[in-house]
Image 1 (tube, rainbow, N blue to C red):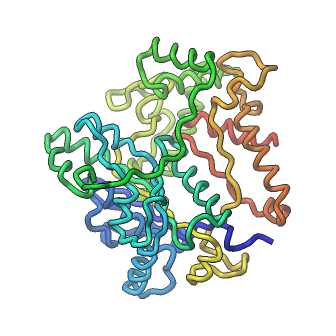
Image 2 (cartoon, rainbow, N blue to C red):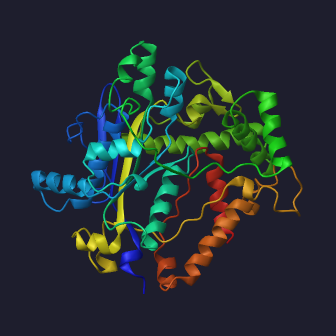
Image 3 (cartoon, rainbow, N blue to C red):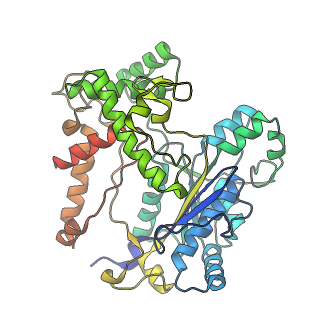
Length: 422
């Protein structure tokens, strides 16, 4: 049987979206679809520390919400955050913006600043964890702490994983030439504080490990002078269409149709979206002043944006700790509002870029969805893990979702097709 002391569970989730006109917040497990119209204890959420503190409070309320007594729930949530034993945060785009304006990064130890804001008196510096910049950062941190729990290498208690971006507010301050005020604000920077220890860095970049890989990246930079995302992903989109015997225009329509469906989901859930607007495929394909071409076939409204003010947080712990705190039942069938974490497969593209020797070295070789080396290897690891679980058959029947982390639409359909070929 699985030891409850070594099985990680997510007990609460909080998400916060804000802009100049409105603040929107939600809690996800205990009260699905709950909305707060900016009056849910989120005062002071106009900074990176404030936004993540507010999202953490929402996650804590989600975890302890058991009655209609708001005051009691608030008190329980604050006590839960005060008991936090570890905090993990991913790198922020804000750090690069701040570096360009002020010549330094805003935080020496962002997890510690958040811990101070939530009153986490049990938080040790060795458990202030920062995931290096990358889209997989949050998932990596969840896996990192789940692994510590599985090996009993972290103190019993709540663990906070979360992040915040305040690029909308910061960019507006830079344009208004008022950003100097932020440099003096404790919730925007800790560089003026004495003796702040650096966090533990994890999820470091996978470096190219041979001459061919370095040559490919170097050539791209030399010819384009642009960051990889602006040039690489448009090329991958076209290459994927070619592998499916589609013209460039046909692939553009496929991508626009997928993103149109994404936008409909965003419009239906404005509490989670910076742009809660639904666009039709035709609107996304139409190039205008407000929807300019970024890199064919991607128009502006088909691309992810980083100029946002948003935060998200989860609280996790061992299943045994959740039982002790009265958050969870000790019976699997009665655990309605917690999420059990069983496995995660994480790989970097460079690890598999040149492994499939039977395939020709062309831009499309790893983009044929049902042959993608990375996706198939991840799928094989998932299948292998499920096969060796004590309750494997039960889990296979009850496996409702697999979570993939990626920014660009083209890779979603590739991953689903690859999994179907397991």
